[in-house]
Image (cartoon, rainbow, N blue to C red):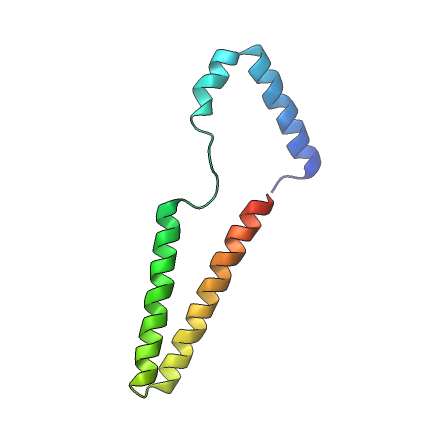
Amino acid sequence: MLSKHERDRLAEIESALEAAEPELAEKFERFEGDRGWSLLRQVLVFTAVALTAVVSLLSLLSGLVWTASALAMITAAGLIAACFGQRQHRET
């Protein structure tokens, strides 16, 4: 992760390059975009967490309490990791 000074310096360099070579900057604009999670990644994480939660509930209903507890903890950890990852990415 870059420090504030490094980010500011990088922004100055980028703006100087854009001013010097606007055509080159236009070619690279297509590579810029949302650096957050793609929609596909969000769907995959949601699906994995939902499936783990369903298996946990089914285990609990069938009497496998320890298995259900372990799967519930995995589900909670997955949700926390997904939320923390998105929040941390938004801050940068």
